[in-house]
Amino acid sequence: EAGVTQFPSHSVIEKGQTVTLRCDPISGHDNLYWYRRVMGKEIKFLLHFVKESKQDESGMPNNRFLAERTGGTYSTLKVQPAELEDSGVYFCASSPAGLYTEAFFGQGTRLTVV
Amino acid sequence: QKEVEQDPGPLSVPEGAIVSLNCTYSNSAFQYFMWYRQYSRKGPELLMYTYSSGNKEDGRFTAQVDKSSKYISLFIRDSQPSDSATYLCAMNTNAGKSTFGDGTTLTVKP
Image (cartoon, rainbow over all chains, first blue to last red; front, side, top):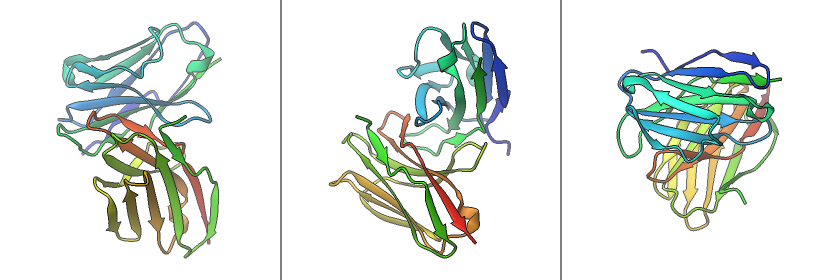
């Protein structure tokens, strides 16, 4: 069974440009999460989808970040325009429906804004 | 103040040693307590999770939760070089999202 897949694995963009990160969750997982780790800090929650609906987006830093989950399958996270402080590793995780179920993480996308 | 504080490390131990990794937390609403292992350039991988206070054992790994003290630990017995990684504690309320500690980097020397 395929795990959580993230594209690209690494992206280097200039300040002011747009970047779109993609996450393909494990098939059948209703829950999809985005997290981010900036250098020297802990992994922080960004948002949570249940199927195609945003359940919790309290961790989104500002309106330059836009997340979508098409048809409850894959998800994209767009940063527009990117700023230097957006650099970090963006993780996606998915889990089955239920009160607590194991979340499986992707390998992350390393974003560098120069 | 962070909701989850993790002993920073790094830790370096000889092969075969017992390792203790620790986190404290301040949010009484946390109900699920997880330990993840993360190898370099990889995503976190769940090692163990517990729901209640007490101990949970899985092979060489033991997770311990003390809700009264808001303290969790992960013990690794007979540590191996392959255990060298960053260990992350994480906690959930019922809401699904996880709150992570900063991580502790462990090196087990042969």
